[in-house]
Length: 398
Image 1 (spheres, rainbow, N blue to C red):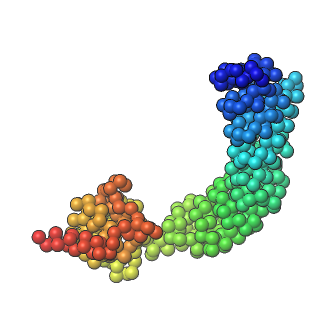
Image 2: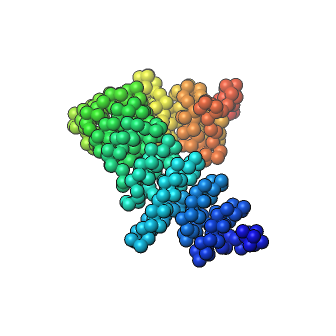
């Protein structure tokens, strides 16, 4: 040990990194005062088992992380019969590190062994059962060692809610596992299951989840996008989804003819048709017709935004805000973010429409457009918005 103390840190680091350093010397360096020396040693593939055992108890988490990564890599590289003893020793120390109090250490092991086809089953199960999601999730998602029975057990005795979410997100889970997730009452896991395109979900289970999505509205979007949506589920879903999802549902090519026609008719009532051309007169006439029918809504405005119809957007905004069309056109030509947002406010729309109108009518880039205020509200005061509209109106009278 005296020689160790006389050597500078750089020399000790070189010794710790060198695979040809004598085993006795490596063991000495495992208790070196320098974290840098011990960390370098932890990455040395030639470090003997007793040295690795010392490093497994190192007080510095970073050293243990590096050791875990090295040992996990060694377990897949030492497959020769002559090296089986070295592999056993590496696995023994890894098994110890799987119980390490530091999540980073356990996570490093999980990341290294998550997709190995020959990883020790006990090690994989220990990682999958870890209460820390960042440890369990990679193994649950990708390990080929886990069977359907293992996944069912994880759902039944989940160490954390995130465990079930990870199982639900695993590619190609079978119907039994999907049933278990659906019955888990874990809303986030069910959302993940519905968003997993390769998950095999029984038709009866899907019907039940569609019915439950009336309360869990966050499930409706992944349901609408399921690769396979049986007729009964599609019809039930069409009765409860929001209008923007109804359009997505209606666009599916696998609907039966009767339902497809029914959705087309419903959308024709709820979504205003586009004008035959983009003239100002036709746009204003259409906007007034919608107002008389009670259909001039923010949804109608946003539909025009999606179609990129500037004439229609201006007309809808002018009629809804009860201002002359030239007031809207003036705000657009001046590229007045405040003016456009104020008109949206007067139209009794939300700032969601305000952001959209600034981009399409004002051609304002995100850096120049006004963003939503606290809670998604308007960023200007009521008095300022009234003043903006009055200013735009006075400008037109000059």
